[in-house]
Length: 273
Image (tube, rainbow, N blue to C red):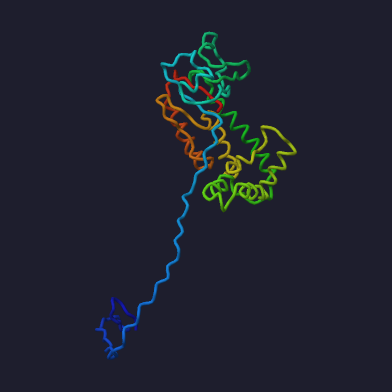
């Protein structure tokens, strides 16, 4: 016999009153002394510390009122509170007229011609993204061969977060040693030692590589024009919360969306920090 809503059900499913059991007469017993309650010492959980992002290149959207003569490295701190140097990482369009060269910032010779900035309409942002995606595809193919047969590795930002959250129990030396002890990291470091060069896969982008080839190509293409941080013309700073891929993606989404809203005459400036 089963029970529903506190009453037993017969095999036909009808309800019948439950028969309460008569309690036995209770015997009078002296009240027992209350037992002391043991309390465990409470431990306060440490708040998670997010590592600061690595900002190597910042893209600055220049205010219209800023004169060209103010766009020098020693004036960056005065106007933008940024300490750095002009970085010729942007590309000028191929068909640049003679009179348009005066509007460019730090223009150099070359095909494509690198520069530190200029009006959006005179910058080949599309070509930069395409070239970065192609280069990323080649590096990914190399990386895939280098790490073939190894397990996916834990990215460095997770080790760094654990260290910063509790540096006494998890020192920096331990974090570095455990990150480097992973077979996939071993494979990448060995390749970098045997074939050094800026175009080789870097352990700093391990998480980006592990996201897949298309993801890595999109990441590098977007980073080519958005840099690591952006300062808008109205003074807002866009930057990732950390070096973790999720935070980097959030920044790139914001930066690319802002670039899409810019007027063709809006001037951009690339700064190496």
